[in-house]
Amino acid sequence: MIAHKKRLALLSVLVLAVFTWVACSPAGSNPEAAPATAVEQPIELIDGLGRTVVLEAPAQRVVSLAPSNTEILYAFGAGKQVVGRDDFSDYPTQAQDLPTIGGSFGDYNLEAIVDLDPDLVLASELNTPEQVKALEDLGLKVYLLSNPEQLEGMYQNLITVAQLTGHDQEAAELVDALKARVAAVDERLAGVSERPLVFYEIDSTDPNAPYTAGAGTFINRLIERAEGENLGLVMDVPYGQISLEELVVQDPDIILLGDSVWGGVTVEDVQQRSGWQDLSAVKEERVYPFDDNLVSRPGPRLVDGLEALADLLHPQAGE
Image (cartoon, rainbow, N blue to C red):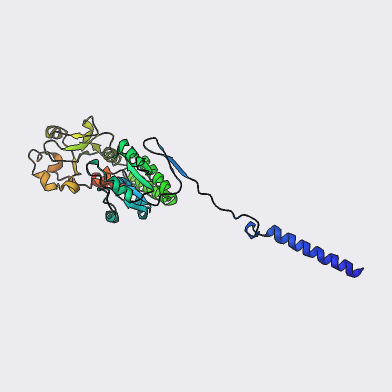
């Protein structure tokens, strides 16, 4: 009788131990339980043409059709996923090692794009709907990124491209850093009371009627954000020519040479132009070369452009 009770007690202990082991074991330790796997969701976004673009997974082979797109891709770490670029994508310098697919005069080498076997072609408003359709007809996935109207739109473009390439966290950190830099400029210029009149020169092939930027352009928005007044607002178009006579009437305080990088225009060239010597900016030596890429490409370097403008327009501010 005693032996029988001992056997029952031992059996109870064994049953309890087995129950406890099963209850505390992870699901994966059960050989009959299916392992839990994360299901990758497709990426579904609406592009600048109003088209719904779906990627089954983040793009790993990207062809960029615009310099701003290329700069965005490299800015948050997707540069290694870029396999081709347009002719004008020259920043950052490592992008210049990529094969080019055209873009001069709006023409692209479709065969070269197909040969690169991209899983995403990142287009911009430099590209027409017809070009997008031609690429789609070749079986390529195309997303057209709209030009932003404000810095906030540029931030959103960074987030969008990051979603398409799998760099959400890196882009979020980049956007936070860019916003902090813009806020620092705003704070530094908060006490500015005088706003200089700025003439931004885009093209002076005809020095008697140089091209400039007016309303609706990032050049104008950044000049205003840097507490300047844009002389180009006298025009009724975003980009156009200003006559020398109008320049003399307006008499800008500062002249910025956006054609210094691509056109090689120098301060000395401006000083030697007929009729320009009487402008206040020339007489007071307030003519400055300026990297047009910082204000004409709607990418993260727009913040660099804002900082550079603030330094030129208000060098003493915040000191």
